[in-house]
Amino acid sequence: MFENLEKLYLSGIDVFRLNFSHGPKSIKKYIINAIRILEKKYNTSIGILGDIQGPKIRIGEFEKNEQNQIDDEKNTFVELKEGDTFSFDLSNKLGNKNRVFLNYPDLLKNVKPGQIILLDDGNLKMKVEGIAYNSDQDISVKATVLTGGKLYSKKGFCIPNMIMPIEVLNEKDIKDILFCINEGVDYLGYSFVQTEYDLIFLKNIINDYYESDFYKNIKKNRIVYDVNELQYKDYDDNTDFYIKEINDYYNNYYLKNYHTYKQIYNVYKNNNLDVGDMDQEMNDRGTHFEDANVVSANSGESSSFNKNLDNEISKYTLNKDVNKIFIISKIEKPSAVKNIDNIIKLSDGIMIARGDLGIETNLSNLPILQKKIINLCKTKYNKIVIVATQMLESMRFIPSPTRAEVTDVATALYDGADCVMLSAETATGKYPILSSSTQNSIIQNVEKDYYFYEYTQKKAENINSNNISFVNTHNHLKQLGNISDTSNEQKKKTSSDTSHFDKLIYSIRDISNNINLKSIVLFSNDFNKILKLSNLKTKAPIVVVTDNKHLSRKLQLAWGIYPYYSTIETGTNKDFISLINYGCQISKQEGFVTSPDEYSLVTFTENIKNSANLIYLCQPCLEN
Picture 1 (cartoon, rainbow, N blue to C red):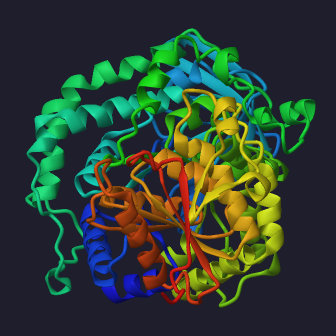
Picture 2: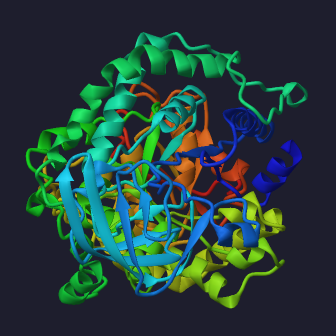
């Protein structure tokens, strides 16, 4: 397996996704160790994203019948036809062609007539006709079959246009999250997020764990850096230290505090959980690309679930600690789209998970939602955004993608996505290495296109920049030797609470457009400021020099960023002239600049001896 992981890395993968829906933790542990070995071998930084399974509502089992026996099926089923009547209830007994058990009383009592029910990932569809409510233990929902077929035992159940009042994380999910934190996973993929309260619920759990004695006392030096000592096991052993750590915390702390965490969901009680008709709403509000708020009808103060949230949102959006795991919220449900603003605010990044989102919304609206969510992340909230699912789906089986798939990958980049993600193509497909290298080739070709920068930079002009008036670099740049400073006039126009670096990012972008600039060397440990520059889509790559290994790994998700981990100190007491020389050296050493007529730009986000409003241009290959 190690050799295959190495080939995947060399084919262009920057971040590896661990899918916790499948396989034991022991295999994940092996992969994490292997990735860290590759980091050391190639002197680089590699990101890891742990994708948590999340809640899955399933129906009960069906009784055996003649049809089951004839088909010799391993799993029992009933065959339903269009127009049939079918019910879901709380009666814990085997189902038949008329009914089945659904052990979610809070869900059943909030269902409304007219809502659509999807079963088995959308293969069967029903419409709710009525609800019989006798007590909290005696509820039945009657529905008419719209799309028939075989309905198997324990298949998935969902109502797309409804906030599902269920536990967002079960025991397995919590233990997987603790495992990710302990093993130094960089990002956490949060599945089936519905509202901002899901984020607050998760962040409370994570913060308590980081502050606990359990976390402080976990085993140090837990990574195996010798490939010959890697152990591959296809089962979890409760005696392994990393399993015992998780179980100890879960049993001795989490369960004791579970009811405190769960109180956040009391807000759902006595509220209307129906999120409305997404298709009708999109038609009513229009589909203009610039109208980002079209995807957030219930966001902000207009949402019935957003009362008194300002303090909670501020608590979890300020003082981002790059040493802790970041949360990538997966947008898979209409309820998440409706509450998108606050979900983005409370997340470190967004994944547009087109698989489930395409099932629960009108498929023809999916491209529109993709563009609008990307636009909202990049132009309003300065957040990372990933486009996922079926990017090169045909390459699971054949060695070349379709023309439509190539265009799909390219379109995601033109839309402004930071990342495009492969799933089954590399996990279970026949051509994982070829799939990765093919997608990497598409990305590289798009980024060579002049129109890519012209188009994406025009979009970036809409970034909420606190009304900063940026200097036009080409006409107004004040130069002193190789050091450039912003004008006093610009400083007067800039709001007092804006950092020096925020005043420079457009100038850096314009320099990249107008001279033969081959690299932007940025000394920084500030994730948000780095993203601001990344979002401007500079033509020159951004080499971020950082002494924080966690940051260098997390930056692998950001567009146009080449993390350069260095142990050199970049604090405010450092001689910035020495740092400038070091930055120029890096640009030449890493091959960004190869001839005397090529430039590098060096700048800072920290105010190192009044240097954070300075831009230094150098020609690293120019002979002295």
